[in-house]
Image (cartoon, rainbow, N blue to C red; front, side, top):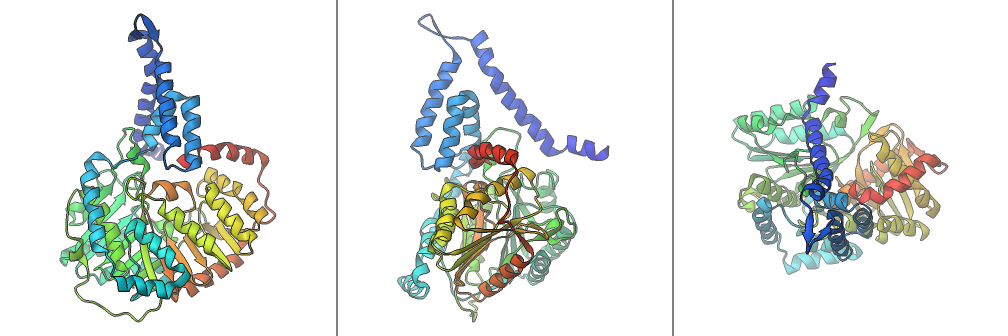
Length: 516
């Protein structure tokens, strides 16, 4: 009974009720207006439905002429023409083309600061082009769209599960002397968070600056509404990303899905792991939780700073000098290869689908093999065609997804993608041991990505995300070895056929997947 009342009176339930109430009022509004406040022009009654239909048609023209994906355009055209009022409301709920007004000034300042901080010399570009060869275009694309530079003098360590990640993270936090910056989609109170929080409180007492940003919607059922305030009282400078209010707003569709930790500008972590006990297998809701991370040391940590500080400053509504957080001394690291941490975000923040195009570039460039892990596989035609084309030209394309779902319907949608991929020669595996949450790609022993970016619409189109693109670094061998192990404990889905009812349901749902 206590659990029932906890759910009923939870913040998420109250928010859902408030939003449903707003939608209900909006649906009833046309009847009320037509009945009590009719629109009459020259003694001619104009039903509100006609006005809405004209407005919906204008939006159809706008959408078709926008840079939205074809799949996204299809959704809106169907909604506008079939259900004008509902389509208009949902459009303004889900689609935001400009920065939120209260954040606009800070977005502008942040973008300018990134440009100033990441300028390259001609020699840096020349060296990068010479040493990366055919892969230079990958790094050049990221720089021209996000401003994120590519660095040598960086050590990368691959962390193949949550236990190792947590141990490495705590060890690095303990060594902090200047600052700790953390940005996570989900924080949930439990053993993992308690271990981290104890270190953070100790570091605050030692004079270390500690900043924390978590996504309010991602943590809405995990933390009390006033938790950020409590952390601030402990001396931790905490902000909630896009505080979630029970008001219909497009800003709620763009969440901060990044998972980043930065220590003194010298050490950084990027991972698929949120801060909650299930991610490190303290509790197991879906069997063994498989997740991965990278720890980077050296020059490339700068990019993590230039990703964290802009979003933190926007939420805190402050301006500051980013370079004051660079390391006080230059440390030479004996490491091979190039490393480029990069971020992505909604089109009003970054004017390109960066994560999508980076994945496409890797797939299209693959010669021998490209292996992928993703918890969700809900992709558009561009990605589907790229994967199928790569397989047809003889590339060994393999994808690992979960065998145990965390979200049943998303699991069905993921499986509905298998058929065309398998027919083209793509090998699909399901991780049998439990739930695989890792988001990573490796290609031809030369290039790879570990990060937060799922192969689904939310990650590729709507969220703030991050990844680490690596070229010719020793850690790629560890990543490949982990892939090879995962293949041995995963189920080959070559003979899988989806239930006809599930296939039909997914076929209908796929019309609306760009909104999922």
